[in-house]
Image (cartoon, rainbow, N blue to C red; front, side, top):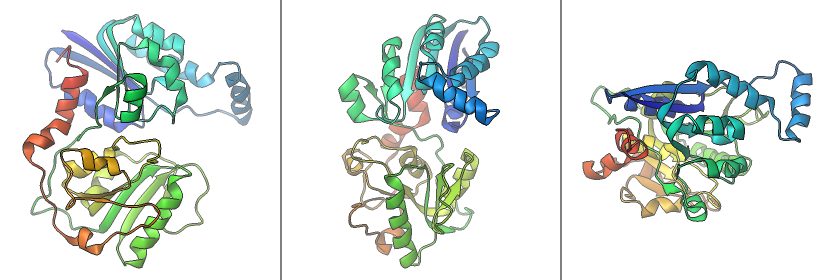
Length: 318
């Protein structure tokens, strides 16, 4: 029996899907750890940790290490996959590396967004990234995000409620563009739902829903099914990789609006399904929103499925 370990932050529900797909192989024992977010017990602890971090010590590292240890005990593994290695100390990563034959990581955020990732690069046997620029710069292996569910609309599908749906984390450069898109959709009398996850006080706007809590994938799925089109908005000056929004749209046969012109280079690109917008001159024709979806050929679609992703990243054990 082969043994695989996956470690990721709790909020990344996509990685639960990876573990479930890996469990389909009867000869692999899978342990997946999803570390909850650290919560300061007092303001004084938060202040103390601020000063600790100036000297390369972080209470959050201790918390995550303490969370992992009781689960893995003294086990050794054939392969370990780490998501967000920058959230673990170098000491913890080195200890994990000593427990496995293959030590891998996947970056589905650009290195510039979480620069501490650069300090972890030397520890891994294989690093995958969805970001083409990082792959060129650091020599990572390129792989896209994945379609975690293939579920085209059915006859008894729930009625469409929104023309456009988007959910994203807050970014100070991206937020003004989101507002402009929301204003455009409202002026065109299109119903939409845009959710931004942040602890910042942005309640003064009535176009975008603000939440501090992660939205479960099942809730995201419901919103996608209720929408004709999804919105994918990245900070394109640095990031060219395709977000999960693109692959969710493919899996549920929904159209997508994006500011990432790189998408036109992919084999699934079809202007009937994908609208590339100019941030400086936002235009979203109703003719695009209201026209039918053109199904992607099965041979192309299959390359971007979770099954294909797992067979690539875990190729040595599947």
